[in-house]
Structure formats: C-alpha cells, structure tokens
Image (cartoon, rainbow, N blue to C red; front, side):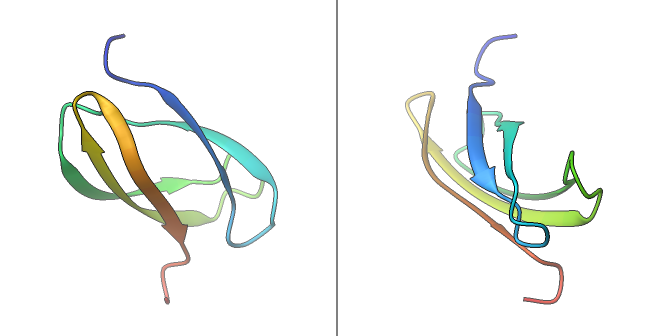
Length: 63
C-alpha cells in the first residue's frame, strides 16, 4: 500500500522495538495502536510532510 512506510519505535511500556506503519497522506495525526509485543495501548502522535514521516512519538495513555 502506498504512503504507509514502516517506522521503528520503542514501546513506552515494555521497552521493545516495534515496527508500525504510518499513513503519510495525513500531515498531523494522533491515534492509538496496541504494542505488538505486550499488547498495551500506545498513543501515537505523527507529523508527516511530502509523503515522509517528520516525527513520530509513542507514549502511554496516562502521559
């Protein structure tokens, strides 16, 4: 699928490196996705520009 580049982040709960796919057709977005290792909900904040991820942050729900 186009505009879904993989990004690697560290889970804020278990500390494992996980790969997530980001929709770069949206310039700013926030969404929740479960960690593929520990299954806890990670709140993602993503900024993208020109089809590329500019920044991505993953945090716990209570941050």
